[in-house]
Image (cartoon, rainbow, N blue to C red; front, side):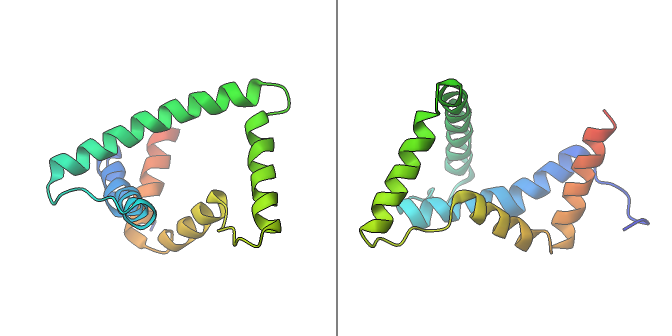
Amino acid sequence: MSNTQMLAPETAFATVHNRVYAPVFFTKLARDYNIGPRPNTDDAEQMLNMAAQLRVAHEEQVKVASASEGNLLTKAGQHLSSVLNQAGFQIPDSEDQLIKRAAAEVSMDPEIAHAVLSLQAAAYNR
């Protein structure tokens, strides 16, 4: 990789977005919610923009919840998992585990690894 020139940040971001983020996002929507964009880029872009807005709102909600005493949201989630386990329901992998597994899989793709390294280099050089 030492002979390979780093990608421009925009190109690196586009590679990661198009090869990792968007496919994972649309696969999750289809699998978990039976939702998919109509086959045009405007719908896909609108869905991605809405997801970004919801992510920002969620991050703010998590900040507020974690600032509260005892983090009520975390305790509620742990209690729910416990009750479901006791009732015999199979709890899927945590989102953190799924993210780590997906990251390990995509890190094996040289194009994606190059794009991520390019993004890191651009952030470091700022």
